[in-house]
Image (cartoon, rainbow, N blue to C red):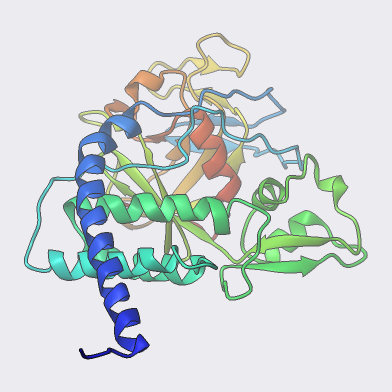
Length: 349
């Protein structure tokens, strides 16, 4: 009887594991394709924040005398806000599907090792995004969003990760200056380091920093916003967009310098009515991120923003005057991550 060397058995075991992973991927993506859209539509934060001194802002007009923001304590998204986004997608497969599925299985196998290779798996899955569609795309985005909770939205720093690092605080350092150096808002650093106020920063501390900036891509056809750190996918949000006749302009936008506000006073350009944060019918929700148009139909457009809403039932529909609406918990998270003057927002069909 022939006796095979141990290397054969190991190779055979690896083949079996790969086959099992491919089978699991096929089953899981089928389930996700059905459940994904339902999960995304039924999520959304509802957390509100106490009003602070603000600037008067019109949705389609410039802000008047923007208020310099102090460094308030960060508010985490409400429990209802998404942590594992799903994006509606058609269940279509092409000739490249089996190859992509095999590569997905290989990436997932990295997470099943005794010491999971989180960063390598993340990077491999992220590289597959342009090639994936349908079930595979939904599955990859779901996995990347889940991995982001490990490598991004936690204090854990992976030595091989180029997107995050450990930083030793020097005397005289401020959280805002550290954030600016790394192209992220100080609120993001507060969130991942579990800090309740910037003043908690002390010399000699080791904190986690993020190498930004964050960017977003908004799809008008699916009412979704994909969030990226540099070129790495993080998660997706369901959004509300402009109604008929006031469609959200396609093109490239940038988070405006001085445009990040907490519950600003707002004047409706249609009715002329001015709303204050304490008004029961105040429409803007928890946060306002002013946008400036850079390319396409966005050029020259004023007064557009990403903001929260008091009408969460309109998220996922065309109901705004052109702005990009988010559930309030999601608006807080995006506000904490977008860097004025650097974070880009691409609106596409």
